[in-house]
Image (tube, rainbow, N blue to C red):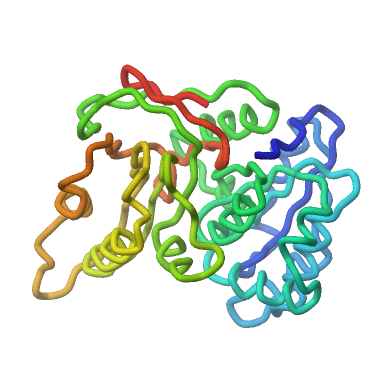
Length: 303
């Protein structure tokens, strides 16, 4: 895997919106944080464009992502927010550039930061051996709470090359055992959407991360079953389950929590399953490097 250069003071970082639209007021706190780190911020030309729910039309978002990934000096790319749209952005890039994988291999790696809908872009980067960061999107800086400072500190540590350490409660580990492996994954809905496409990840001997938000419980069960049937859970080293919050149910209850679904569907798994990992849509959204090896021992996850 290609690890991008870690950041130093004075380096240039970029901000793009490959999915849902965003307004300038939502980004002031994140821009101030970038300046506090000593980095120089450049924003995409279509950052505040609006096309219904999207941050500009597909072609505009594609142009911005092409600009960012091919930028000659920048070392990191931040995403403004998730929502929906990254898969359309990649499709528009393909129309412009042809073979996207070949084009990406001609660019020098940069840290790509985000989560949720941009899991699609992470999967594309991992397919092409780029290490990237599953971490906060820029609009989250405006949501101040007790975990904000640590979220930001963890991301800064990831970007400058400091070790990442997560203390996890041993009671949240099913079949506890030490493990290590390359981390891959992200939002469950986007992993599910990748099945049968060229972005479906190869998970053999890897540590798989899943998280999600605002889904019906039976949708979660459907996605877990599909991922199982597609083999995503077959030969992994471990499963990390991030936040699974704001779930919905029908008037006739589904009858199982997300944890119960996972334990039932993976009842024959012989690897650890770590629940409540502080990554995803909840207040704790700690940065972690996708494509890099993570280690787990004595309830401590490190990278």
